[in-house]
Amino acid sequence: SSELTQDPAVSVALGQTVRITCQGDSLRSYYASWYQQKPGQAPVLVIYGKNNRPSGIPDRFSGSSSGNTASLTITGAQAEDEADYYCNSRDSSGNHLAFGGGTKLTVL
Amino acid sequence: QVQLQESGPGLVKPSETLSLTCTVSGGSISSYYWSWIRQPPGKGLEWIGYIYYSGSTNYNPSLKSRVTISVDTSKNQFSLKLSSVTAADTAVYYCARLPGGYDILTGQPLDYYMDVWGKGTTVTVSS
Image: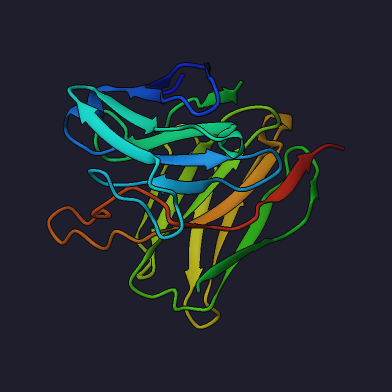
């Protein structure tokens, strides 16, 4: 089982706002990063650090954190945002890398 | 920009050793950490381990007894060996870069995110 916990599936209406969460003890001390993965493709980094977007990632993607929960928010979800989203950070020991189990986002 | 390409056999027999190489192009392997991640069919991502260009490593505790990651700076490559494979090791294997830099206090990466990924290579374990 993963040390970072994500809801398996989330849905959002086109153009609405959705929040995908990641919970874990390590998130009280370390930032989470977020990846988008579409079928048959490699993951793509969308958020890292406090709330940083790599070049080319739309500004509708944002990140936040509170306590043991990190969140990825998509403001105005588009059809092309339908994908699996994974969080990653350190594990509870702080010495190893860990991924969340992933959240499948459906845009209705 | 930096690109990563995984290579290696797509089919490995049970109990044998899986060997993959990641070639870094468009940039130097130096001054970065490099990681292997895998994804079994229909499942999530699993971190395997990472290596600093100098050779220091860190492995997933659940795989540590079977994993070796090495680096060849002269070839701009790093490699994965996973021994005693079973069908549970069937997965898409990705290599990726950790850009966060070296923390001199801990000897670990400053950040644990991965900004560049290879396209992945499918490895099937079957006789």
